[in-house]
Length: 316
Image 1 (cartoon, rainbow, N blue to C red):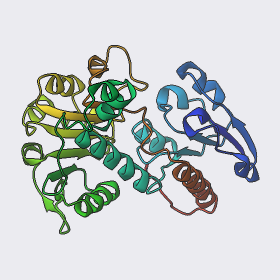
Image 2: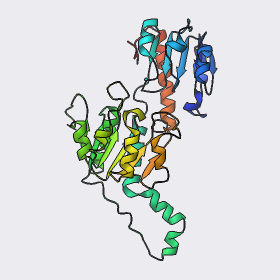
Image 3: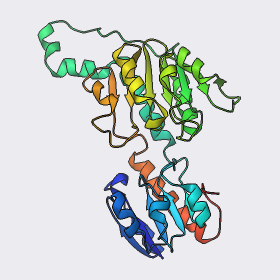
């Protein structure tokens, strides 16, 4: 068996692939450009990837390919319909990053609510020393207790965020297409209108693409904090940027972008330098522990496939 790993750089230099050698030959590429994909998978049995796009254009000549393993929960970069027609199995990884995504979500919220970045810079750049005053209380910050935390997407991650939000004293409301008993479920419009903190945890599908559109963003409660750690394309980035500039959104935390890495033409880049905005480079899933867990799950997916077991299959 020959396994090809196409974009190991996205998994971190501290992750080892030695354990995959028990399956056979393993070829590891740190990065693979779009025009290199077809050649690199030409004679492999299994492809492991994170962000590379696979579809008819680069899969048609991969005659030996039997299994695609995505090192993520989202699999919108894979044409699963084409894979189904070709008899190529596709597996994702579920649940490996729930705790760390929730942790980053809450970290962003706490930092933005308390204006930690601004206060940190106030001390470090010497303004605190020069002031001669023992403390500083501007910009004004607030307790989380009593605030409403809206969660768009109430899966495993959304539920974990809800648990933490409630522990911090927040009221939780949620948007979920199929309402559940363990949360107060509302429409997305209502979520936008009533949330003091709104965090987005939606998968990217045809139904969620652009779901947080200009109309809904304009409904967001004035001064609310918005955090997106799901997929960039679920939100209208231009509308988000405008809402921050117009003072509608009081704080913005973004870990994901419609095109990654973020491009100079992305409207969100116009917010660089603003004190009430946090940007991170798609790290929410990537704690060391979650990455190790992810790779172990990929191994188990390969084991299951070789044993004719159905595990984490998404093309079926």
